[in-house]
Amino acid sequence: MFQLPRDGTAVATFIKTDSPVVVEILALSDLDFVVLDAEHAPFDRGAMDRMLFTARALGLPMLVRVPDHRDATILSALDLGAAGIVVPHVDSAADAHNVVGAARFIGGRRGISLSARFGGFGTISRAEAIADADRSAVICQIESAAAVDAVEAIAAVPGVGGLLIGRSDLALSLGVDSPSAPAVMDAVERIVAAAKPQALSVVLVCANTTEAAEFAQSGANAFVIGSDQSLLRSAALQIRAITRR
Image (cartoon, rainbow, N blue to C red):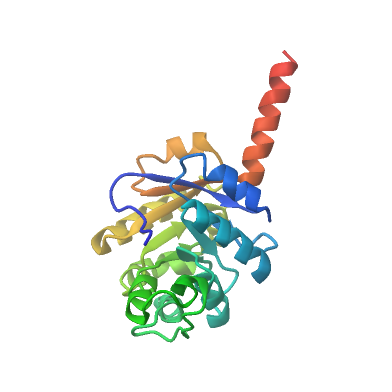
């Protein structure tokens, strides 16, 4: 089962395009994992099924950023074979308890059907399937002033596997114009500090590799850099710039 690193650095990107070929190409890129963005991109259950099938077949760990906290939403992503979930707008310890409960069998309330992909379509024993599934990553997004105020309590919730820092939303919530504003940077420092006593991974979303390099000493364990769309656009712009010289 995939686990985010506690030491070292992992690199990933968002997938926003409904195409298994995108997954196939990224599987050849030596990324550590990818995040299917079902919050901001148009992935219904059928599209998610195709993308997760491809990722699992190619051995590429795929997390799903779910659009909400509903039990059915979390169940669907995990039943289809996600290596874990990224949950937006976790603003309190109560929110964290809720999403962990939805993602877990033991001590939680996740409904079970071993005929789903996570259970090997009925070929994996009940005990093995449950144990493996209950190790799936639950990553809480910290992206509001309320979440920063509660981050120590959120990090201490059993079952939370990591904290993802959404600086753009943090900037909006804090009332500042830039994701690099001092108030945001102070929040990043507090989030990283809250993660350390719990040995949690910290995932930082960056627009590009330059931004990731600037945050390399931030204490983050993983970087989600851009998306399939931004990588394609960036490559096209580079090609066009070269031909205009």
